[in-house]
Image (tube, rainbow, N blue to C red; front, top):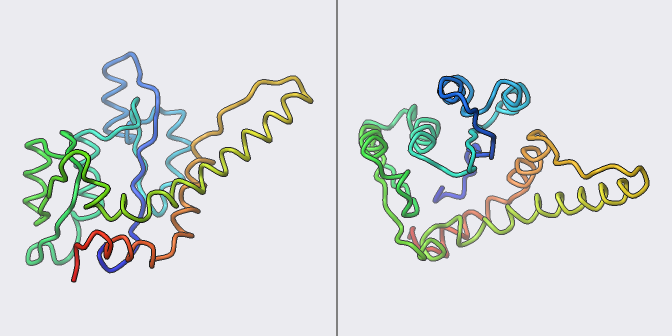
Length: 192
């Protein structure tokens, strides 16, 4: 936020979609978009943050609503204090349902025009790069390890499960100094 505070993560991961419509609906309502098997791995990871899944690993209106509810829905001052939320110009952030819910909890959504998030959004200004660098480095170390081992044991490379990825992301978020976030807010000139 504008004070440099880090709030709990809200992650969207890629997951496969069932071919059965009723299973898709059950996954969305009961397991944040994940199937039963993957959910057994994902659910225990959600102690301090939220994890959602969809086939594109991209936001949609449902995930935008969940984000608003998670971060702003239960704040004690929502009746008296407005909060400005800067969101890029993505249609899933600005559906009628999302806008109506945001207004009901006193969140003012500001749309950042395409190609301007790098100027206006503190995340893009300062901390997205260091946040992505650490997991990327972990991923490269893992790939090198698997390549080395696959040559010795004649086995194929294997994608790590959600636990590994989420642990890399949360470690990077935990290690990110609050000053980096605060500097991003200052660079975007959103505060005095």
